[in-house]
Image (tube, rainbow, N blue to C red):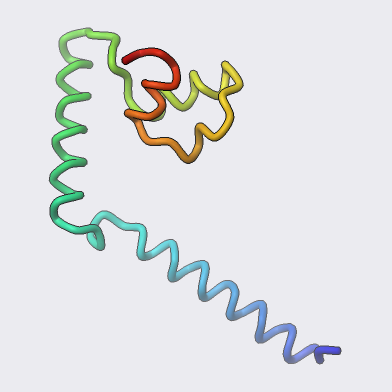
Length: 89
């Protein structure tokens, strides 16, 4: 059996690990090629929104549509995969 002190230490370690994991998911820690790809994709989406085009949608819009349709595994898919699975491409 673990003592109360050991349980408290384990809880603290889990919290620290979760905090560290969240910090590493920032844009600053991504490779420059990924950052530029995200920037290009964001610019393309912004351009489509300015021109009033409805397709292709953002990943969030596609994910929401996939959830409404009951598509399994949609949370792990990227924008392209979601569009393909929903028949937009």
